[in-house]
Image (cartoon, rainbow, N blue to C red; front, top):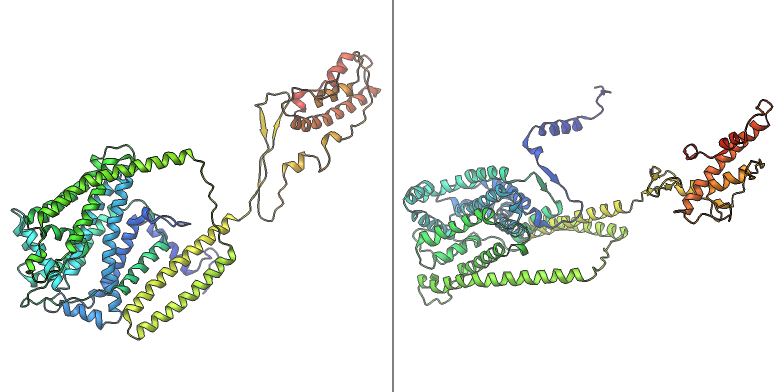
Length: 598
């Protein structure tokens, strides 16, 4: 098989170029991915981290689909088989569960960061609206996921969701029949279809609209988030819970943390539709219209006090209701209903008091922040001395981390062989975190080596000519010397050697030629060229730049000496006319600034 001289690339390179060229016709190449060259705050790309966790959920969920059975009597048993029998099933299920919690948490953090920073104001209204919808669908996706296990907690969540849906006026019963079916047998299959197909399709469609054109993909932070999910799964492995049995009354249980706030409202024994549908719907609607009611011109949270206070109020109320959703009266002498009911007067009084407290706290923080900024402007800024790690220590740390990674791999493999599933998952999480640190060290060392590269640049030399004003200048072009080349500075060309001066140069002997004015041509030309006063023999006092004038005058003096030699040869030549007047000689010896300015 011969090698083509016209296409020296091998088959792998040609395949890569073909794929890259093909992507140029797709929407994928419209996105601009940025790989940071140094550490940047993850707050600016929490949306990208949320999408990465969504990819992790898709991979682990596809693995779980291979053994899950969406049948009422076998759903819990199939999940138990995955968790206890299937190789690496424990790892996949725990990663999937904790990744779902991480996706909800990252989506909430992303929303509030955009809210307080005012990012929705710079023509990002569409991104904000689609982001709120994505957050709601993310919670629904997580809700349907832990329901299809069909444990006792799943049965409680299903019953609450069905009751809330049925409480919707007019359309409630029809919606409940469409989503939940006529019984538990229909419900398992329908929720499974929603969880693995319908909701992911809608999520992907909204992501296409929601994604901005410029995305930041930070490899160390992605590895850190992935490692944190695995580490959490190893330290807090998810329990299977009790299998749902319709013949056994359920015990006291609470839903997932992102639904306990809603659960606390339902436990206040108010109207189901008001507490479970209307109030959450009002909260979501308020978030949707925030970009259209925020009329502040600035973006900082300090310059938008009312909007900032609303955000602080919502966070405080979410924290309080989430805590109350987990709280269960410990008195076992009371009935189940008495232990679950929350005093509505106490709950809503606290919720109402949080509004003025949050507004007062917001205005106090804004005042303190602005005073701190004013004091910082008055004080002299302190010099920041960046800490630079020597290259030798970078190599040592890198080698130590590589050795630690090898140890973690061996330890994790040994833990898997001995059935220590949660310990092996914990070690894999540590391994991912160490890899994140290694990548950051590599990136730091690479940036440090680039900053230490010496680039020699010649200085530009400016000449001010005596015949022009001080504003008329001319610059010599500069050239950056490459590595290994000799950089010749302009000082080496136009300046005298060390220890000497251009003024010490010996004058060229030129015979004096008498003129009608009684002075020699050489003295008059030299004085006019060098800027020396003929009467005093000193430099002119009105010279704007004596050093540059001296260099230019020296060059002009050499030119004048050559002109004087030519004139002397012309006068002594036999062919020259004897009728040459003195005025002609003076005209020929007069320095022409326009010609000698070179």
